[in-house]
Image (tube, rainbow, N blue to C red; front, top):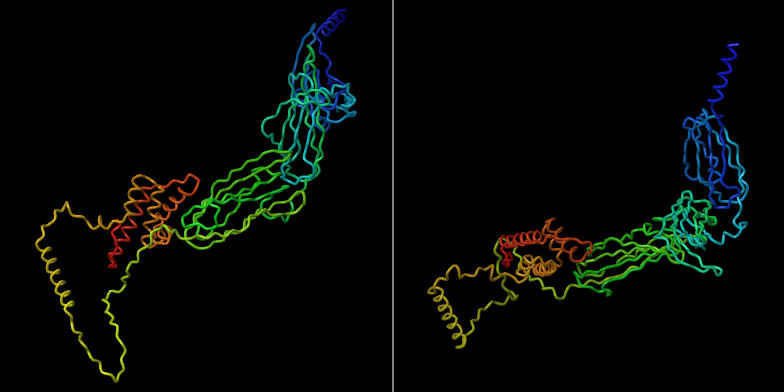
Length: 550
């Protein structure tokens, strides 16, 4: 009797304090749904799940799946303890038809599959007229790394409160938004729409057949006092990407049109030595980005100093095409007279319309360089190379051996005697003036260096003190020309001083290059003065009569 009473009490207690049964269920918030419309998938587990989550890999093969959110709950009602875990995610179907949401398994529990009916937009009740998406891509196949313009336009026929428009996606393809989106109004079939336009630069990195899924829009509009949810999806676009030809020379440049042009300043084909020439090369191409434009290789020309400038690049979109341009400037400084030929320049590119390799080029050009007529002529300096005194040569008249040589003395006239006496008198007067003149004070003496100092050297010193690079360059050219050098570079190379040649090159680059090159005029002037002093000392050693330049 007692045992039966105790057993009844235990059954009563268990009935008041029990656990709910475990299970796993899956559900959607709407069925059917429209193509491109998001719906919410909810998976709920009753009981302990031990930190496991549902596997959505099979679901992602059929639908577009958003991020998953997780929540847990535990409750006690009338002594009964229940715990549950919920997972939710936003899911979208891109194509119409009947689809099956697969079963999910968590901690040994399995849900039932769900049959979902996706309705195409043309079977909707007319709400597709409130919002729709259009996409556009240039016609024809693309090549690997060829740039194309992918345009997305969203049309909204009601007051837009908020919304989200996804970006296009494709494996092994890069999409880059160009600038900011454009917002304007358009009239379509007599109805006014708010239009949002986005342009994407698309570059495929792999060849093959692909499909670009259209972008998806989901948002809310105002209708009277209500907020209505709206959605739209753009059409899919088939894409054929061709590989790079194996025999293409140089850097890969796929385009519909490439042009290479040039400009010269000055435009004449004849220039003087030292006159700077600016050569500007412009490379324009469609269907490529500005980074894809190759650098133009300009060969060095004997007789010219070359100072290339940094290239300027830019790109724009026009009429559904990407247009890129690169401008390169090169400063040429002729160093010596003569006729020079600048070779032809070529850039290889692949014509995507014709399917073959072509070349954009500028023809060869001949330039005549003449000596500067305003430059002072170099003086002729005597050459003293022999250490022994030269024997004066006497012009002789060949005579026949059989004829005797007879010396005939000419008789002097009175005019000859007068000139002879006058010369002796002038010599005596000059000697007396030197003997009896008063000594000049040391402060009043004029040194030979001051008397013989040349104008170019005075100009050179003045320009160095003022820091005037252009004036210094002109004075240095005049001075080296007076010393017999054809050009300033030739004079610098003969000094066998690498520092001097380097500083002179910096001086020329400062004047004729646009790359912000600077020269230390003080250092250059010291090197020039040292070279001139060495030149003067060498002249004294060799016995030459040279002007004192330092």
